[in-house]
Image (cartoon, rainbow, N blue to C red; front, side, top):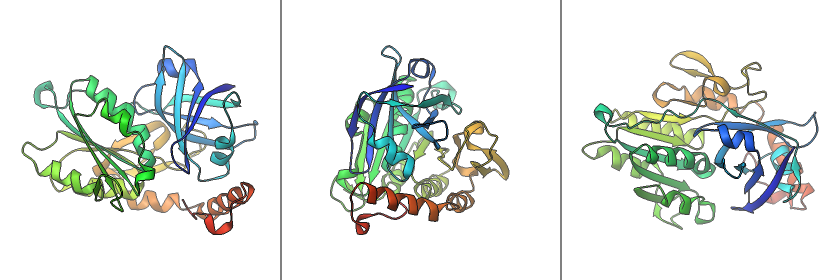
Length: 293
């Protein structure tokens, strides 16, 4: 049982929770994730990335979007209540080093889209601690959906915020400033992208034009987190990989994004149904439901 110490609504559908998890907090590294079970032994298990942790306090920070039945149940929990099970840390940590030639400080561009900004934060923190020059690009549909901007400012040498509608920062997609960085001389030594699959796909295409390496963190369908179910399999470099044990991070230039996005739609009809039902349970009108959100 993991006690909820604080809860904060970052936007209409995005929630931040700080929970007691001393063992995970003391051993987690940037890029890893946890498997969360909200209530009973028969409850659904969902993967959530670790947005932050405090080993001294024994706390874990999770940021999640309410898109289905389980995340809605989790979002309804309040401070003082408990989460049945949190398993982790899982997955391989981000490879952190000085990315410049000869082990010198490198220039790394980190791109976060939507809720993907949260798991990007510990990676930015670690890259900066290793001595790199870190440029961060945050993207969201609107101003209201921009998250973690203040936290990123603590570690980013450069910070660019873009919104689809221009309501905050630059009116652009994240690939706009990413391309500008890639066009500079010298170009970035490394790039990192976390966000919706389609965003990561186009970040890969953008960096590929300039032969800039890119690391992407994948959030596929996942059940057990141990590689046994096979639900999270993806094709990387022509080989089958399992995100939970081989990832979650991979060389973006080798990921078959089209195949991954096709697999992630396998349960879309059921997910839409659950999302619709949860909104009705909350007393929202059906027309307010964002199908497939």
